[in-house]
Every structure is written in C-alpha cells, then in structure tokens.
Length: 140
Image 1 (tube, rainbow, N blue to C red):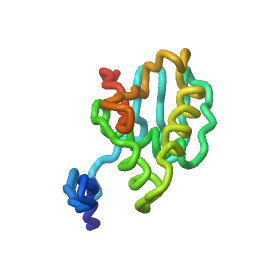
Image 2: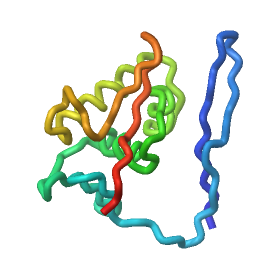
Image 3: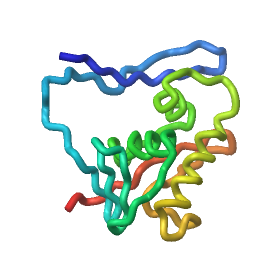
C-alpha cells in the first residue's frame, strides 16, 4: 500500500512558505483508467501516448507530464509554479516561462487552432499571475 500526497506550496509577500495538502490517498490496487478522454483527445496512461482523432501526437516527456497533470484534474486551475514543482519534481526559483513554453508546444500539437484553445485554457489573473487548466469535457 502506497500513500500519495499532492502538496501546494505558497509563498506570501513576506517570504513565508505555507503548504496545503491538496490530495491524499492510499493506493490499494484500485482501478486506474487506462485511457483519459477529452473530446477527440485520448491519453493512454500505460503506453504514455496521446492520440487526437486516432492519430499519434508526439509529445516530449515534460509535455506529456504537463498534459497528464491537467487531464487528471479537469477544471482545476494550476499556477505555473505548481505545475513546475509537480512535473519537474523539484522546487524552482527561476523563470517559470519554461512551463508556459511547454504549454504553448502542447497547444501547437493538440489544438486545431492554438490561438483559440479548446483543451488547455489560460487564466490570467494579473500581469504576473498566469494559471492554466484543462477544460471540463463530458466523458463518452
């Protein structure tokens, strides 16, 4: 039995860091879906491949991991700092635009019109705070 936790780290204006446990569960050989579907987009978890309209979408390791993170929590808004921490599995204190560059690359590969994204949406709260989310789709 393996315990899994997803922790969000928040730094306030004074530099104090607080952590929130977002998800915590114990894995007990529960059913894990083999495919996550969003409209015409399919993510095959065991094979680590993505298909759109049954055509392969070639993603880098980090692109796949970002897409999977967003797809596992559709509708949830992720800050780019949290995406970096969870996907790269390390805290980062530099330029978070690497996350947005990967998201741009993902959009180029999965969206019909990357300028009007259907799957990954950007939420701009202010000039310095950009967050992303995977759109909610009805599973079919």
